[in-house]
Image (cartoon, rainbow, N blue to C red; front, side):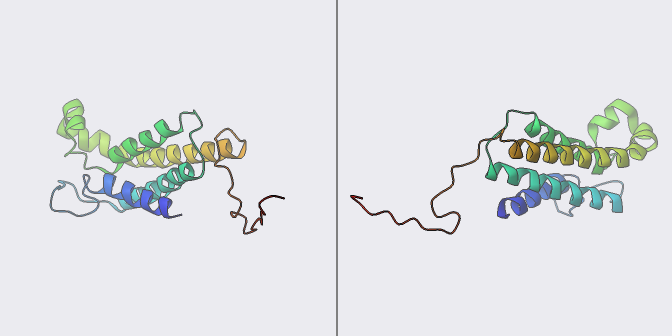
Length: 153
């Protein structure tokens, strides 16, 4: 649970600070933060934190889940960032294209980012349940039952 909370906070900071959804002295925006930006950041952070926590429970599955988790973060960054401040978007579309074409598409990117992270989480949980991810061996005291082992018997 602690890893899920730390993962969610880490994701929120990693995505929210450079996009200035989380106010800070290092980054700024030309276009203000929309309420949807905050919703996407919170949802993406929560799902990503839960996904990260599954790695504390079980080892890697060999599937593309880590790439999907990282990909959702990148898509989420584009979804909540200022369209005019994004140098890549401005280089590809120009300032007018960033505001007229890219900005209206950002909510779709936000939904896609959260959906991608949620899909990665579902696939990861299914893989764990099917036994495709190695689980740590249970310790003798993990179930609350102590084993009394007497030497020599």
